[in-house]
Length: 164
Image (cartoon, rainbow, N blue to C red; front, top):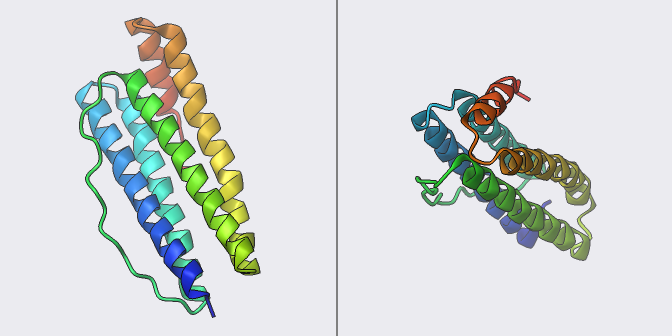
């Protein structure tokens, strides 16, 4: 049986993962409006990945005999000042998610919930990749500055992302 304290924290994380999906969909909408379809595609894939993360935790709660309780999802930001600002926000958001996963892992350790620790190890590894990807794109955008040609090239590169 799932510890009630861990169950609540896992339910909170489901909400955070779904909120992440909302954030990335909002970023995709921004890129569509800015005529950057490659970046919009990248963000849509990111949103889908966040939904998969939420479902992984959702299923884990169910598998452990727990009760999933869905929570309200706040509206994401709708405007951004530039493509760089979007990826800066994405990177900062991934850092926040990483901290949330670490806090959840620490709770699982405190509660001696070994199955949850094992499940969360996947998320810890995943967050390393998430931060790396957002940081790399952010760094490229910082390097190219306001060059439309370079932004076009980065957009084409982002369009090549497959549905992870």
